[in-house]
Length: 491
Image (cartoon, rainbow, N blue to C red; front, side):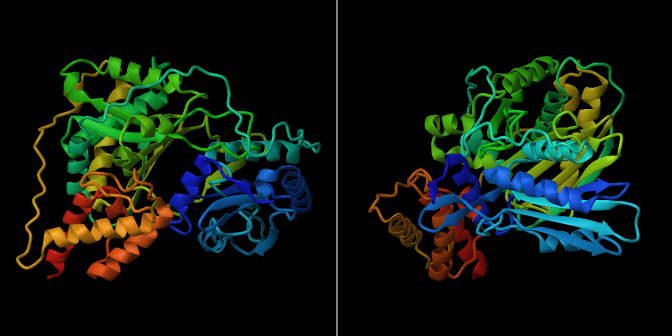
């Protein structure tokens, strides 16, 4: 029986439509002493039969619906002389339109003393945090013969949230336009990846969480990188139930971070760290600010949820060691890259080492390396001392950003504008009036419509815009200027 989906599920599904294999969470579990494949096979069947979340699939057409299937996902068993992880991963990617949104391969590796279990789950079912909880549960059951309780302790599809404070966090978008303008100056049509290991200086028990320290260091680095006092980015909320992976809704919730460093002057960074720390705990386990921002701010500002995402992980949140006594470890499939954000920075901390992964679909490699260098400098400074001053880390020369568009003779900007508004009205099928500075997304355009809109623009003007161009130029006026730029270059 088909059911309606939650707003969180719609968000992820709409985004995944823009990139066929976006939102996969592929992981390898390494068994150094070999894997009892029949035992693990039977155990996984038990979990998949008991919990509807693993048997959920979606139908995406004019509406998005979901259902619980009778059949469990297929569990493959394969033998390898040597395991080629990249090749295995390429064969096991998941699309939101697939019947099975969970893929498992139990891997016997002949030429090695170890075996692997590969598992890939679509993010619409779980986030990385919930995946880690699930694998810990599975490994405990596998090692100690008797599975942990597989009883369903909540209704499928009902989000379980831990109790916590519900303090609202004010988000100021007054300077977002200037920030966005500076960001646009760096954007190009390029996809790059960076991986780096950073060694941190030893530090006594910190006054603030390591997440707060890392987020502050990255925010300061971003300000230096853009040459702007104003920093806007998002990061995953930590508000998830640590006992729950069995129900739909355990999603990473993005909540915005904004700070104007010019207000701090030359003071120490203590109160910035404290402010971030307070913001983290005020939303822990209780409140998703995404909906608050939509209601309070114009939809045109919501680019913030895809422009720059900072994702911090640590052994306390996502443990790579699933069982120390048997050496069973979790390895992320780093060969798979997801380009759904303009700039996605992931930081994993283990003891005094940081692994930094940068995935960018819009920035040059030299710019990304510069940002990484700034982050390395700033986080090491903060680990050496909480009392470092902002002036020691940040030198910003604010320059007013202006993007002038020269209109070619013979090309009528008014005619382009009229065509853009006409296309939007036709797609919305509601005879809406499209204002000059009114966001397409405010008017009701979703990701499925956006794909059609992109196709219509290409047919009409013979130019090929990126999906990100529509997110960045989200009003009729902005998109008209972007089209005029492209027409000028084409001629």
